[in-house]
Length: 312
Image (cartoon, rainbow, N blue to C red; front, side, top):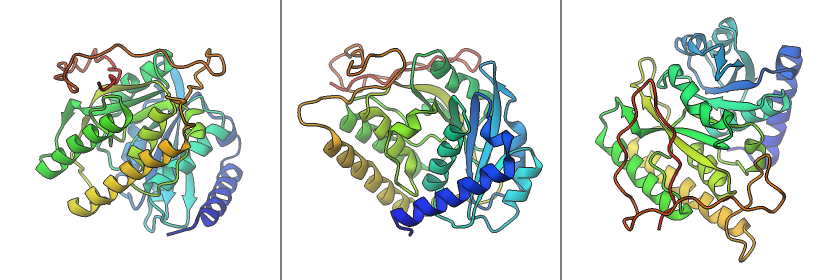
C-alpha cells in the first residue's frame, strides 16, 4: 500500500506523462470524458472502448483509460482502439485509478465525467440516460441502479450485500439509495474535485457518500449490470469484499461527519446558480415507512431518473 505522499507523486508523474504523450487531445477534451479504470483487461478493453458512443446527450465524448499497473497488453489495446491512455506503473486499486482519471478529465477541460468498467458489464446504450439529468441541470451526480433496472448476476450473497449496503448508506446519509456500487455513473466534472477521495479500492461508496454529505443533488437511473464475459473479477471472495466494503462505507461516513461544522446541518452545494451559502432545496417528504416500495422501472426507451428520497 502506498502512502499519501507516494500516491501524490505517482499521480503527478502519470498525469505529466499522459499530457505530454497525448498533447492537445488531452489538454482540449470534448465536453464529456468517459473514464475507465483497467487492470489486466487485455482481450476486452478494446471492445469496451469501441462500444462507447461518439456523442452523449448531443455532446462529443473522449475515452480516458487509466491502466492501473497492468502487466498484459491493456495499454496497447486501449490505445489501438482510440482511447487516451494513462499508464500507471503501480497497481494501487480501482479507486486510485478513477481518482487520477477524474483529475485528467478536469484538467483537460471536460465539463462532464461518465464512468464505466473495463470488463464490459455495463451497457453503453444506457449512458445517455445516466448523463441526461446532469446535463439538464437536474442533478450534480447520477448513478445507475440495478435495483431500479435489472441484473444478470445470480449470486445471492452479492445480491444481499447490495441491499444491505444500500440500506446502510440510506440510513447514514438520510437519503434513500437503492444501489451503492454501480459502476456506470455521471457527474459534473468539478464535483470530483470538491470531495475527498482517498480509497484505493471499493471506492464507489466513498464517492457516493462524499457527494451526498456535501449537499450535491444525486439521482438514480434504472440500468443493467451484465455478467462478465471475459476474464475474472478482481473483487475477491465475497466475505473479504464485504468486510472491506463495509469498512469504506462506515469509515467514509465517519470522516465526512467529522468534517461538518457543528450545527451546520447539510453541507452546502456548489451547483451553478446557487449563491454562496445557499442550502439545497429540501426534497419532498416520504410516507411513514422509511423505505417505500420501489416504483416499477421505466422501459428501456424512456427510463426516468429517480431522486433519492430523504429517510424519515
